[in-house]
Image 1 (cartoon, rainbow, N blue to C red):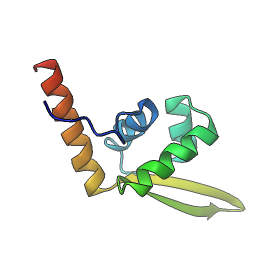
Image 2 (cartoon, rainbow, N blue to C red; image 1 turned 30 degrees about the horizontal axis):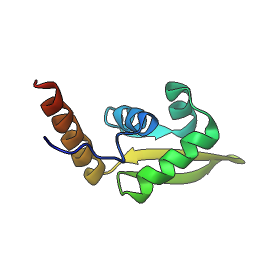
Image 3 (cartoon, rainbow, N blue to C red; image 1 turned 90 degrees about the horizontal axis):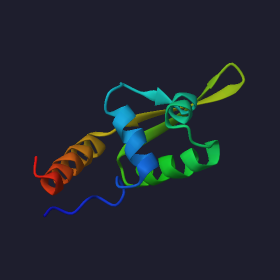
Image 4 (spheres, rainbow, N blue to C red; image 1 turned 90 degrees about the vertical axis):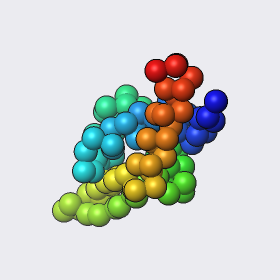
Amino acid sequence: MKELDPILHSQLRLAVMSILMNVEEADFVYLKEQTESTAGNLSVQLDKLATAGYITVTKSFVGKKTRTTCQVTQQGREAFEQYVEALKSYLNL
């Protein structure tokens, strides 16, 4: 059996990656709403994904407000696809 990537095996990190795999980019507020997480927890999990090289996090300003956007990297895309394949092997699909 293939090993499941521990970075992606977290429920919130997996949810974030699932969202980012289907969009060009997503902002922090959107990810927070879609995952129904707290700002603090989401922030910690985004840092872990960014440190692993799975996403890029960009901070910018819109007027006087900060805007944080996230995008999946090629490394993250490949890791997610491998995770899904490993999960399928556990399910005998």
